[in-house]
Length: 178
Image (cartoon, rainbow, N blue to C red):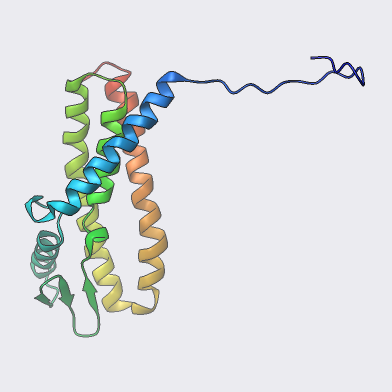
């Protein structure tokens, strides 16, 4: 576009509206909101991804590998350290994120079911491995527990969710494989 006053050429920036992206973002946010509300309201009915079951399963796994601990409600107590299982420790937010991504992405119901069916156990077992690792770390190196928990493993969990979603899009949705 030529500026009449100065005679110079200017480029106009145009916002390109992508309807598919807008629909994805809209359904993603709606899905996130609904799942978040339901997870808070009905937490006790969500198997595996609630505070009580997470604490109990973690305690069972720790005992199975010979780690001596006691459990009191949502807290695992070791001789020199303890872990309290809060909602963010359950993996439910990662499940909500990946399920919302999968449901919002344009694909068939069958492919969405495959994606969510694969994501749930992957997230669950990754989270349990994370909690077992953090328990061992806290018992042996309590000074680095917070840093590893708050930064390294949180970021790793986010990357796992993103990686799984990209994997699902590329290997299940785009390739046509089930």
